Length: 195
Image (cartoon, rainbow, N blue to C red; front, side):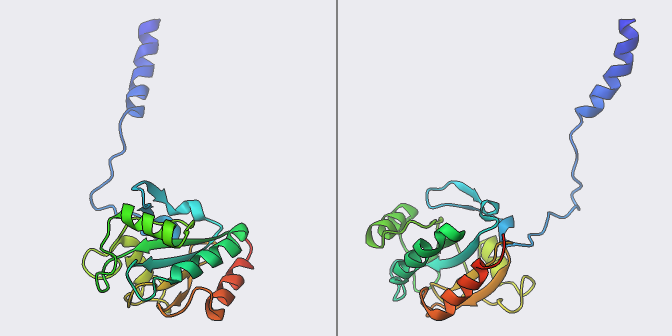
């Protein structure tokens, strides 16, 4: 009796143990929103951006030795003002423009927290333009993502506004102050949309 049951069950169990083989020509899932990316934070830990689903994001490439570096103060001010409504500033240090972010992640973190009292999320230094561009910035600047907001990053402190669904809805130039009417009006409009 046991032998007959074993003969019936063992083939079925064997099928359960076979791993799914992904064909080499099967394409990887193409990201459709900012929320499809994973990045490293300033402490080197993986962060899945899907954790920000339902929040409005201002994504900024930053640098510590730039004429626009004081914008950290404005970024912190708008973060503090709107964080209770589902708003986040995500800062991505980069060294592509005038080598104005030469330090290690630990130095960048120390600079931002001591000089500007930054409390919004800081991420590991990445490449935002040219060879070795990070996939997130490849996505943000690609005409395939949104031709209205596409194009290479011109300098430090370029800003992308992302809605609660992870879609880029506005882009601001480095000289656009975080607390300017142009930026804050767009943030307010995005925050007014339902989650």
